[in-house]
Image 1 (cartoon, rainbow, N blue to C red):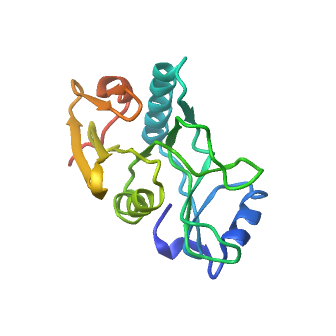
Image 2: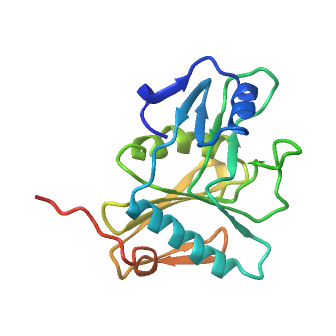
Length: 203
């Protein structure tokens, strides 16, 4: 999602958005009645997303959890017909471990991810850290791990749900680091997910 001046529609309900999105040729995210055109990916962003998805897919093979592509929508909010309050998003990577729960019979809007990964970019970082994470942690009771991955430097940040609504923060920095994802019993080695990624050079 880009900044709010790139809103496409206003006063759009959840139902209107979903009906339009299901026939749209490009993806959009939705926040409280506003529809946003999603930004295109840089090579670095796309590379990291593919590597994270591949690493988790390999580690979860034969286990009850499954890795989902960024084309799976997630609804953060309690749905009621005609309302506009809520968030439809397309996380870069999501994992579901229980029997998947969906918004309706179309099975294209997931309600119970256990882990969500967002790969940061300059246009989306603030939203991913603030409003999006707020919706994820308050509206998705299933969510146990939230992961933010930098494209500017080798750094992965992990937020783990704790009792009584607290979230524990940890990070892994540097190409020699590894971060554990306890919710799904996996780990990400930064050397693996950042392989062939070029970082910005300060002038």
